[in-house]
Length: 228
Image (cartoon, rainbow, N blue to C red; front, side, top):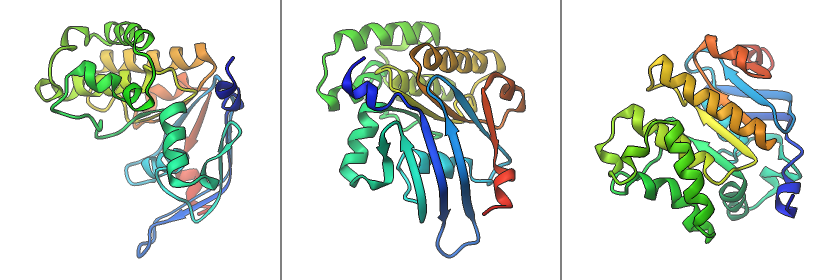
């Protein structure tokens, strides 16, 4: 295990995390949350309950009013903005609700783009990309621009991009929302298998109660409302 991997192998820890949007009554308060390496957490709850907001807090894309988020040995919100960005690039895989793909690039270019920012070699990444896209049934689209794909195909490209660099932390915001049940199950199974095999942490937002039994832990946002 490399030194970088060792620093992130201890899982996710949250203590007294508080956040509020200014000028509105919405609040998030997580008194305590722990997720061990190799485990998977589902964030569940109705629309507007704060699932996506909490995911953004856990990845450093939003800054809390108080509290602490630790990913391995890293105290996320004690870092500078640039250090957080670098940490995300190296150690986090993100599946955004809006996919955050570049329409003018091909599927291959979108999936491998984070590797170009890191300046790493592409051989291993290309091999992993082929494995992932075959399992996701999108390998035939590798040379196509993302703008030519359906919503469901784009969603699977975003999943492949999040996993291709084998990050120690994977955060996915409704990664099955644009998929039929069969393809959605393929995505969830792959996220769970990939992260558990590598001893990584998976945090996934879902609106589907049928998926919750596959996760090691479930955090229901309505349970947090009483503490906010």
